Figure 1 (tube, helix red, strand yellow):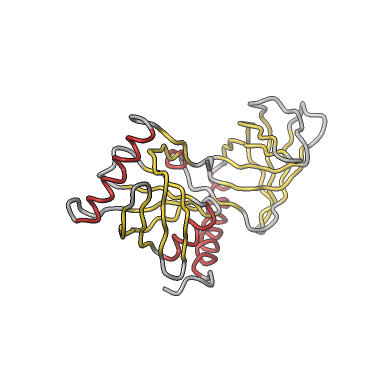
Figure 2 (cartoon, rainbow, N blue to C red):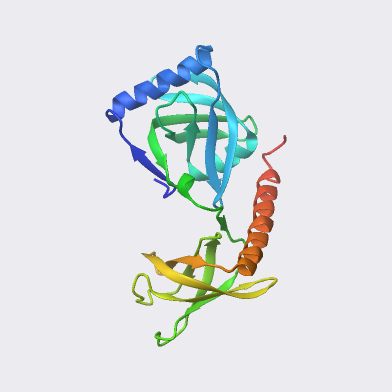
Length: 237
């Protein structure tokens, strides 16, 4: 399961699935108003369009979706369904995607908590190499790496190996943006060991001027990401 989503059980897996599919069937038949929207994340940017229920089977459902949504669904292999008729948000695996025909088939739906909904600010994944380094007076060496993603409240940096920093270590995080290097007060929130590398998650406390620089870069990156999606060869609308 993607880290953006956490599956929940309100009754049990089978009864939750039956309830969700019954709700989708009622939307399809017109008994319930269709306010269905899908949610995915592409390079950390939320992508959300409306959808139409085409068919319901015993364990799956076919939906007509926006082509841009279909592009992201094809990558994530799942999607979140949001509707006022569900008791909670729903996450479902995707077994079939046709971007050109705007069709997806969902299976194994269940209730979910969308962790990304709790973010305090928009996050974007970076498309170019942005060098970064973390330093503090008490550290023997500066920790150097590359930014993976950024928001106004936090940043993650990929490094070659775990530097062994204590959690809550405070210091200064320097990032080499195209417009110039900025230095931000930061503290280490989490360390994620990955295959052969390590990801450091920082909470940041930018000044007003630093926040403006970061905001401008995030907005520019959002525009690039949306254009990248719309320029996908399968998108014709």
